[in-house]
Amino acid sequence: MIRRIRTLTPLLVLACAGSGAWASKKAFNIQDDLLAYPQFQVFFPDEYILDARARELLQNQQESSSASADKTFSEGNDAQVYLGSRKDQSEDVNKETIEGSGFTYEEMLLEGQRYLCSIPQVDNGNRDQTNGAESTSKEDEQREIARATDRGLELLREMEGKCMYYISGWWSYSFCYKKQIKQFHALPSGPGVPNYPPIEDSTTHSFVLGRFPNSGDDEDLEGDAEHKKTTTDVAELQTKGGSRYLVQRLGGGTKCDLTGKDRKIEVQFHCHPQSTDRIGWIKELTTCSYLMVIYTPRLCNDVAFLPPQQDEAHAIECREILSEEEVSDWEANREYHLAQQLVESAITPEFPVVGDIEVGAHKWVGSEGKQIEKGRVASIGEEKIEVVAKRQNGEITRLSKEELKKYGLDPEKIETLKSRLEELAKGKDWTLEIVESNGERGLVGTVDSNDDEKEDHAAQGSISQPAQGTTADKGESNAETGEEKKKADEKIDHYEPEKSGPTTDDADDGSEEIFFKDEL
Image (cartoon, rainbow, N blue to C red):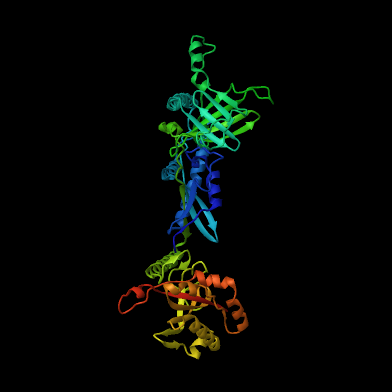
C-alpha cells in the first residue's frame, strides 16, 4: 500500500471546530491565507491499527471526558463529597494517559475504509490564566508597546534631513521626515531637468498634506503638563495581521476647499528587510484625508516590528483500522506495492523527458515527413549553384537533356541562352549556372572579361528565361527592359582566375555575371 499524503478539508474543519485546546498558538486573523499556510495538515502514514486498540483509545477518551465533566460539577457543589474508588482511580489513569499522549482521537470513514485519526493538542497558553495574571499580562503588553514605540522613533530618527519621492500620474509626492509631506506636479524631464528627484512645477498648485510637530514647540511647552505631548501622541504602535507597524498622524496641511479643514495624513512605517527606505503607496481615503505607507529596513532592527513567522502545520495522522483477519492481506498488499515501486524505480527512460516531451525521440520533428521548414529569413545568404553549361579553353560542355529536365529546364531554351552567351563573350570563356537563393531560382551567366571591356559588358541587358510551361516571348521582352539591364549591371562580380604564371594582363582579368531570371 503506497504512502499517501493529502489534505482533507472536512477533517481540518473538525480539528478547528473541536476542543479549544486544539487551537494554534498564533491568534486567528481574518487576513491569514489558510490554504497557503494551513494550521493543520492530514497525513496517511503507511501503517495500521487494530480494531481492538482503536476502540480502547476511543473509549478511554470518552470516559476521561465524562470524568472531567463530573469533577467540574462536584467542585461547584460544596455539599457533596465523593469517596475515592478503584474505578475513579482507573479513570484518572486513563485521563492521564490520554492527556499525556498529547493527542485526541477521532474515527473517520473515508471511501468505505475506517481510519483512526490522532489530532495533536496544542496548548494556547492563555486559557488557564487567572484574572490577576490577565491584568499583569495587559500591563506587560502596555509596557512592551511603549518600549517598542520609543525604540521605533529612535530608529526612524536616522531619516532626518532626507527626503523620499513618489510619482503617481500627474501628481508627485515628497516626504521629508520631521518636516512635511507635499503634493505637487513635477516638471517633465528634459535638458536641465533630471528624472529623479522630481522638480516641482512652480506654475501649478501644490498642497501640503501634513506637517510634523515642531520640536521647538515641545521644548517651549515642556513645563506645561496640560500641553506636554507623550510619545504615544506623536506615534502609535498598531498590530494588523500579526505584524506590527508604527503610525504617525500628521495635520496642519493646506486648507481643503471642499471641507474647509486642513488636510491631514496618516503615515505607516512598516518593516521591510529586503528594501531601502521607500514610499510603498499613497491614496486619498476620504476628501483631503490621505494614507501613506513607507517601507523601511530600519524598524527591522527591533524584534517587535519583524514580520510574523509562519508556523508549521500541525500533523493529523490517520491510520487504517483493521481486524486481525485483515492484517495478512494488508501486509501482502503492502509488499506487492513496495516491489512495484522498486521495479518502476529501476526502469530508466530511454530519452530524457522535459515538459512531457521526450528529448531526442523524434516524435515531433526529425523523422520522415516531420521536418522543420526554414523561413525565408533563415535562408538569407544560402545559395545552391549547379553548372548548366560552360566554355573553358574553347571547349563547350553542358548537362544532358535528362539532367536539364531534372531541374525543370527546357533544353531548347538553354540552347538559346548558350548561344546568347557566345555572342556576349566574343570568344572568351563563360559559365551558365542555375542558382537557388531565398526560395527563388535563377540562371546566371558569367563571362570572363578584361578591365578594358568591363564597361561594354556592363551595358548588356539581362536575358529573362522562363521555366518550362511559360512562353519564350515573355522572357525575350524582359531581356530588353532597362530595369533588367540596370539589375545586371549592379550584380557584376570580379575575380582573378588561376593562371599558370602571373602577368600584368592576367592581373587585370575579371568576370562579368549576367542574370537570367528563371520564372517558376
